Amino acid sequence: MCFSSCGYSDDHFPKNGFTQILKVDVDVKMSPELLHVFIMTRLKIIEACGYTVVKHRKTTTEKGYHFWFRTLEPMTDSEACALQFLLGDDQVRARFNFLRNEAGAFKQFNALFNKKLKLKGGEV
Image (cartoon, rainbow, N blue to C red; front, side, top):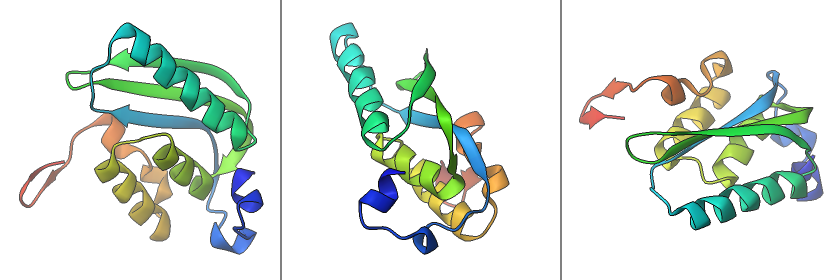
C-alpha cells in the first residue's frame, strides 16, 4: 500500500505471505497523556500507509508496552515488517524480523514478541 506510493516496486517486497496483525514492542514507560498521543500517532501512521485499523490493544510489560494493531486490509509479510519498524518497534526485534523475512523464515515472524531468545553475548 504505502510502500508503492513511496517509490518501492512490488519486486522490492517479495510476497512471502500475508498478515493483518502488526505487533509493536516499545521499551519505554509513558505517562497516560503521552501514551494516548503515542497510540493516536501510530494509528495515523498506519492510515497514512493506506491501511484501516479495525482493532488495537496494548499490554503493559516490565519495560514498557506491547501493542497489537489489526488492519482490515492484508499486507505482505515484508510490508508488515517494514511498517512495524516505522511504528517504533524495538530495533533489535525489527532487525531479527527483517533477517527472518530475507531468509524466507517469516512463519517465525514476531517470535521475540512472544519469548526472549538467548544469543551469544546476552539476552535479546
